[in-house]
Structure formats: structure tokens, C-alpha cells
Length: 319
Ligand SMILES: Cc1cc2nc3c(=O)[nH]c(=O)nc-3n(C[C@H](O)[C@H](O)[C@H](O)COP(=O)(O)O)c2cc1C
Image (cartoon, rainbow, N blue to C red; front, side, top):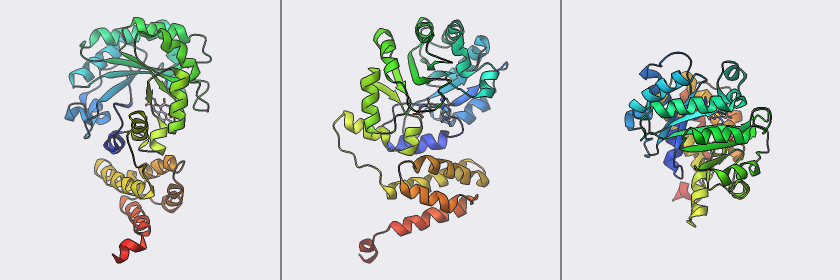
């Protein structure tokens, strides 16, 4: 997720377990071959065989409307060791769409085919090429045509965000609209959109008929959601993350972020995560209020520590 799930967030979340694969933020492809440093900036995991520290593969995501340039850049990512390439046909941002990238391409299914097949043909067969779409741009009238284009281009897997571009991020997600596609698809279909809890997960797989799902904002609000889902699926026990666990994660995140970015960016990143966490954790709302005017890493860490010391129970203080 652009501006949110970078390598530091992937490191944090994959350590908690339950995640089988990550995708980078989208890398915008225009009319140049991007220098290696760009791929490495978006996906430093390429220096680690394309895996997070916890060993989870990270696919490099490309966005653009020029098949030839997409192919050239996909090959470069593959050469750098990307475990897979994901192509973004879902981004709704005005500026991105105006520059011929993301969901606007869904208006022309033949272009979806041209882009994916150019990328597929340019990259080694061992590199999976996956795609992510929405149900359509304005409406769902082209959904079957779009999916047919995806299948004919030899895509390995397709993720469907169960909303149109016009729906934006507004609930609900129309999981049932995926089931038709799933039924006739020759490739795995991954359902996405509005999965915030185990209950949402259950409804989503039931309505979409998919066995695999992609989590977006849900895992930022509830960092062990993937683990909760796996525990539920495999009938394993799992102790849900409590407020103390969340504070520990935030302290680690602040530290990792400080090592990766300039000090003055740490505050925004922690605040941004708190913005998602407060949906599930009242403590995150409280902490957000206390850090919202802070910028620097050390000030933020101090507040997190203050909350951590407040959480220590009287029993452990005297034991
Ligand atoms: C801030 C933000 C950034 C996003 N960036 C990307 C992106 O770079 N690539 C992508 O495929 N989807 C991106 N998405 C879409 C999510 O991957 C996901 O499809 C969408 O949020 C629906 O899932 P959710 O309801 O679980 O969040 C982004 C969404 C948000 C809110």
C-alpha cells in the first residue's frame, strides 16, 4: 500500500506470522527503464533473495500503461531477484489514472491483455506474473472481459478488489461479485476488500467462493489478523495481540523506522499506523492524541515508553 506498507511495515507484520506473501507499493513505470536503485528502494528485500527477514516473499508491483516499458522494467525486477511481479490495475488516484496507470486501464480490457502478455513474454517462466484489478472502472459491465484478458495473458494469479474505481474505498466490498469469476477461472483468484476481522474473512470466503484473500487496511488495524485467520483455519490456538503487544510493536516500529528514514519522518509513520490501529485498539486513540503534535523519533519513543510503563501491573512491580 503506497506510502504505508513499505519494507519496515512488511518487516513488522511478517514477523507476527500468518502472511504468505507481500507486494511492494506500486512502482510507477513511464517511458524509461528505472535504475536499479529505484527497485531496491521500494523493495530492499531484493538484497535478501526477495524475502522479508521472516522469510516471506515480496512481489514487486508495477503500474503503467505502456506494455513495452512495463516489460522492460519487469525483466529488470526479475533480474534483481524479484520472486514475482504484480501488475496494478486497481489504483483509483486521479493523478495516476490521468497518466494512464491503474484502474483507468480497466476501461479497455485489450490493454490489460497487452500489458500482462508483454510482461509475461519478457520475463523468465520461473517468475510468476500476477495482476490486481477492481470490479471495473465505472461499473461491472466489463468484468468478465477483463478477467478473460487476464487469463488469456497467462497470468499466474488474479487478485480482485471487490469494488469499482467509482466505489473508491467506501464500504461495502461486493465479495459475491467475485464468485462467478472464481467458478470459471483457470487460475487462483484472491479476494480483497473490507476484511477487518475473522467474521469478515468468513463472509468473504463464503460469498466469493475463494480460498485465498488479500488483506489491506485490515492488517494495519489488527496486525495479527493473518495469524488469527490461519489459527482459525487450521484449528490452532492463538493469543490475540493485546494493548501491551501493540505498544511493543509500536516501539519496535519507531526504532526500525528511525534506522531507515530521517528522524523527522518517524513521527508521521508512527502516527499513520496509530490512525489504523485506533480502529481496533482504544489505547491507540489515546496515544495518538498524545503524539499528534510530535515529530521526532525520541519524543515519540518517550511517549510509547510512558504508556508501556503505565501498563505494568502492580503485581509485577512488587514481585
Ligand atoms: C493508502 C492506501 C494505499 C494503497 N496502495 C496500493 C498499492 O500501492 N497497490 C495496490 O495494489 N493497492 C493499493 N491499495 C489498495 C489496497 O491494496 C486494497 O486493495 C484496498 O485497500 C482494499 O482492501 P482493504 O479494504 O482490505 O483495505 C492502497 C490502499 C490504501 C488505502
